[in-house]
Length: 68
Image (tube, rainbow, N blue to C red; front, side):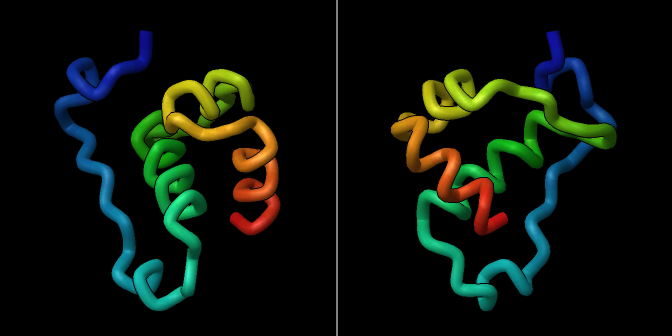
């Protein structure tokens, strides 16, 4: 399991320019989720799981991923 508790040396940081990029709230939420899940490597989470974790519709996740 890849949880934040197991990655004590990792601190997810959202760059300040993301505030100015004009992301919609759901896009920002999904980006933050991906950053937390990816850690220092990459994120291979399914769209249904991301939707469930972020309390979003799968269609919204797909749309947000296209923007990101």
